[in-house]
Length: 173
Image (cartoon, rainbow, N blue to C red; front, side, top):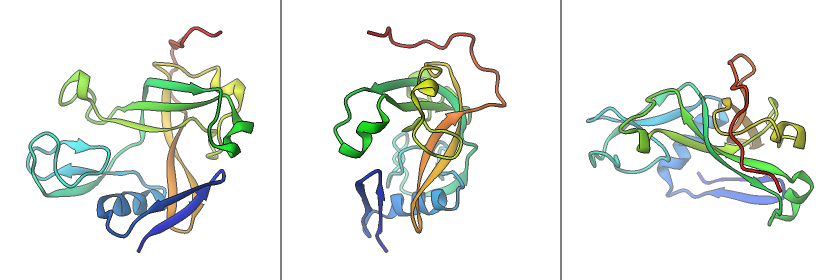
């Protein structure tokens, strides 16, 4: 069954034929982070795919993964294209390298998951939180419920982790 929801005025749909993403978002809806683990090489992968990108095996098993890691890269949006996002600018879209399977299969191709920077309750982060986060910031996953059976994995500061003294950030205008 297709998943449909609305997030800040933007319609989201996961179609019936998108089997891997339906399963992925089923776990997210339960606020439980799972990724596919290849049955042959045992590497986890993101985003969900039909075949392993490392060994091309067509079978995998969903494994629970701890949603913690550090910011590998980010973009800071100041000019939102979606009208409902305009009141939330600036906001961050983060690429977080997970602690799980860190540096594999190589440091350049590690397991990284994208999501918005949010508060602990899954709301887009206010400007004062955006200013605190940069490359190296320690993050933990939270979920934003958008409809029955559809939740988005997002990132918030991991308050229990040691944060870098000064995370790297792009120079500000």
